[in-house]
Length: 281
Image (cartoon, rainbow, N blue to C red; front, side, top):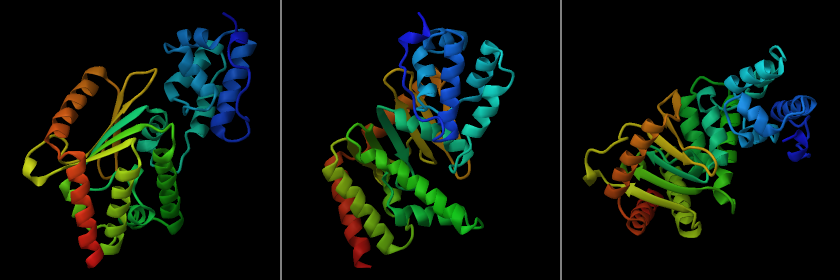
């Protein structure tokens, strides 16, 4: 197979460091007379994966960039471009997970304390980020809020992922930003549950007692053409997990938590009643 079998058009290379990386990869590959599949074989990945880098769908990865430099004999060219392309307004530990979030066909998430980021209102997100970044300049806070709101837009897209959310009942009672912010956030969450058929939310009640994930956040992402991955997060760090046996263990634990949670309709009723209580305050 030759390079001519791959797609010929690519994104504008000067739009961002990520698109420039993709255009450079395409240029070097085509000059070498190789297809995406052939390059993938040299980097121990699929041709589809290489194509996603060229199309600037996926963010460049350090290990793949190193193998590209070795395969093409380009010194540290792709490693340097990778470093530039990976600069982000998001926390460094979350960057790869945020990239995968955009590609997922389905996202299953559990949150013990806060409404998940994809479903947060701007006021709610700002209150959380202000608390976590107490000593950061206002511009940093503004950038983080903007990034979180941009992430949330995927929920409203017709081709966005199926989103299955489990929140602990504590999420409804942790007063973030005051009563008015909570009333707005819970009302918005209820509206999404009613109007968006691709979003399903369940509440894990206090009565369920001890369950997995009680002390943190877990996001399980499933993809059309690659294995699933799990992202876990605590206050100032996070971990992306793709080891198959661990991902399977998280999936089994999530299924148990889902079984212990309230049905969607009962969850909606609880969320709406709590929103009304906050609105009265």
